[in-house]
Image (cartoon, rainbow, N blue to C red):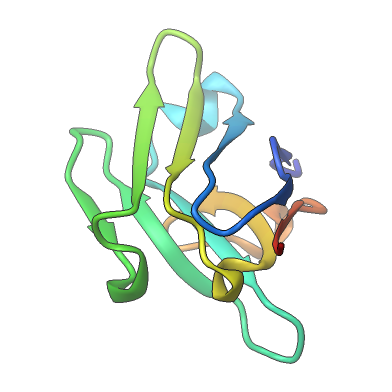
Length: 114
């Protein structure tokens, strides 16, 4: 099972995007979920995570700009990204937290550029 993220695109600095990831109920209901990203030449990193009961954590560099949320009725996890910066440019992935190798999808590319 691969988790597919969507919603990426090209945005100017200061702009916003919302990423989505629809997950099967069997995965969604029992796992904490996370958003990860991988920039060119860098390792994949956890950007934001949310437990089943709503506790969140964020990478320091995105605190106050990114918000993770989950819609339990839709089995979907979101990442609202505001005030995007060029350094946020990366392929973004969703996975459980901690991640499972078999769940990595292709990700969605976010490019922040003027």
